[in-house]
Image (cartoon, rainbow over all chains, first blue to last red; front, top):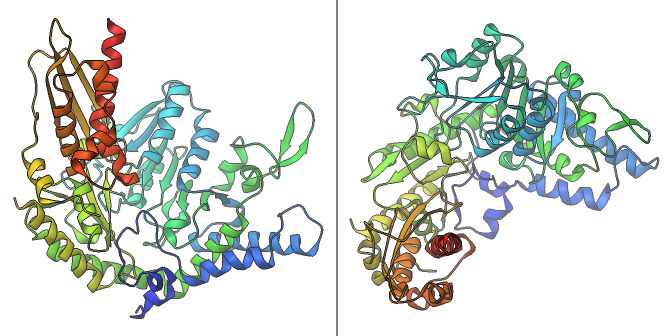
Amino acid sequence: MIKTNIKDDFPIFKNYPDLVYLDNAATTQKPRGVIEAVSNYYQKFNSNVHRGLYQLAEESTRIYEDSRKTVAAFIGADQEEIIFTRNTTEGLNLVAYSLGLNLKKGDEIILSLAEHHSNLVPWQIIAQKTGAVLKFIDLNEDGELDLNSSSDGQKGGLKGLLSVKTKIVSLAYISNVLGNINPLKEIFKTVKKFNSQIICIVDAAQSVAHLPLNVKSLQADFVAFSGHKMYGPMGIGVLYGKKEILEKMEPFLGGGDMIAAVYLNHSEYKQGAAKFEAGTPNVAGALGLGEAIRYLQAIGMENIEAKEKELTAYLWERLENFPNIKILGTKDLAKRSSLVAFEYKHVHAHDVGAILSSSNVAVRAGHHCAMPLHKNIGVQASTRISLSFYNMHKDIDQFFIGLQKVGKIFAF
Amino acid sequence: MDFYKPDLVKLFKNPHNFGTLEDADIEIVETNATCGDEIKMQIKLDKKTKKVVDVKYVCFGCLVCITSSSVFTDMMKGKTLAEVKKITLEDINKVLQIPITSAKLNCISLSMKAVNKGISQYEQKK
């Protein structure tokens, strides 16, 4: 059970008692412990890591590496497999550049039609540079990934797309528009059975704060996520990479801290995650992220999942029957996360968002960085509600008061 | 902050110059990167004076996008392309009188961006 006054843990709701924040997929609010940890770092520990010989630098290094351990334990990884990045986008770019640039002409990368731009654009860049080819898993009417159909050359079902040329499969765990939870365990099992050398990558940006994650049982080779979508600070993210693969990869960025030795014309690099962390890292961010994870663990991911499921069902029941509303994604609530995007017939999503804002309700409106997906499902822009465990029934009630205003203003 | 004044909602529902032209001299499609909206604009020029005799657009957009396009296209008529290029956001907003927030800047300027791009392409072709 989650305590009823959970919002008290989040100072922003003290500053804005009337704020109905339903844009948690964009970024979550921060609990007091996280804000204090970041502030505390700069007041008590600030110094660079892995360099100084003095006490403060020792402390700072310990804090940074402890956060790495916390992240590793949270997702079932080893600490040398945790690379700190800025965000999911940077993590996916790191893999794309360090691994993807080794692809040969004609090699194939499988994505889906429902990817966020961050899991599409880096691969487009790599494909243009190497001559590799992008293939896309199609969606059924409910936006679920097609696992079995044959391929039309560019898109199709997973089984139809897999070939001897397939080198990479990179997919979102939860679609940031459809809210569908993709069956990645099943998908990666199929992929690895087909060819165990194919690299399986997860964009976990929308899942990490909502679903328990174990990289080993998922059989994932890489998993990228952002701290700020899981109650941590902005500017810190994580890329998990399987140790054996990290060892073989070229660095992404070069510079200080990632080197073992530097000569005038060449350098030797550190091993493991350290090879991929060039320059001074975001130590305060890592500390804040560690604190966010401890906060989530104290509540319990299973409690979070249960509360968010209950809230989603409460929202769903009324939204599904609301006039002029078409919900995107699967109707099977068991396959959904706590984000729900919809189209309001004849009214643009920006207008829905702006009118909701006048009722103190914060939602996202637009293409949510997934333009190809919107084109594919024939929707130009949508309005997205994304719930957190701190939301309450009265937040959802307030959303519907705002939504009724939309109908009144446009009076179709 | 109110975009949704009754007169603007009325204009949104019946915007001026909405539709397509058969024989346009300038035709352009422009996308709003924030929301993915697409606008298609067409301009017909007088053969002799080169002034805008007709202009039409098609777009599924928000209220700010549609009403600003309506006002802008009204203003364009009877003007030379050089005069059209001088029309500013402020000129359009004198009619609309809405708060231009950072999120709304792309919406209010979409038709203007499209037209300016179309004019540059037309002038380069000449």
